[in-house]
Length: 356
Image 1 (spheres, rainbow, N blue to C red):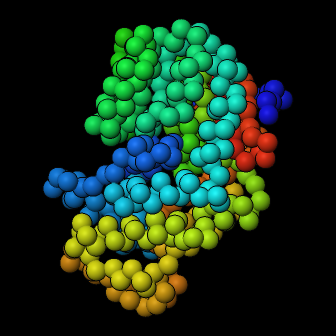
Image 2: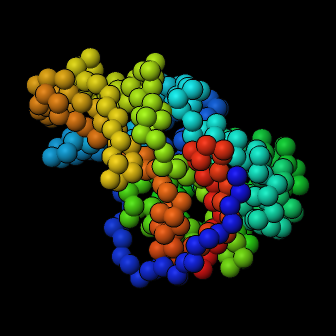
């Protein structure tokens, strides 16, 4: 389905102040853009500094009145394997739906991006969807995959160099949720940021707008943003996608407790916790929790935490947008919609936007 732009947008409110980005979703941000096991690069805390940060995040999160655990810690080896299984589930539509949109409309999307573009991908993983673009782009100047996993990023870049020998490929190891700059030699008026996977939906609204502002600043006057995002839909479809019948998503969520036990000398009795996925209609988002079945105490590296029956640990948001809602959010970042592609069910959207 291809849509023209029926919206008349103002330039937005770039003077608004937003809270700084939390250290949030650093791994999920690139994991959710891919479905193949090769894209799921497992992360563990190997250095003492990484373990210290992990411990601090867990202890501070569990000390809050609304306990929380950062979903950036989902992806140890077992978590990566489980996420791979999730992407293969019949109930979990996002990955295959976005891939279908890209495959069907790659030519039109590439035409919208235009010739001689510098393509910068946020959370590139194995760049699976990007190949659909690279195969159709006209005389692209360069491809800059941005990812926080340096080893995996360079491996993927090397394979792309083999497959696209004439293309300048320059990987950037960076966390795109924080401030980073493109190398000066690659700054172009035709820079297009590619941000697939509906990762934007894992951010709070003010964080999403802040990230869109930083993207708008990197786009040249003739560049733009190509972004994938999940659309609002029937609650039953959403709940099935995040609480599947086989219980794979539950295993994925609860695996975080297993990881904390293993790496942080904790004693979570995982059998006494359950996975909970709730659709918050007012906020149009799925909210993921781990819920305590009874009153219990948990020790994490010597610090004790108390749980009441039914008390929940928040682990993740996944916002679902109406098209007009996303357009309005982008306008606040100084971006306007140029084109939109969706699937036949209107489950998912790929949008091209340009600076106002």
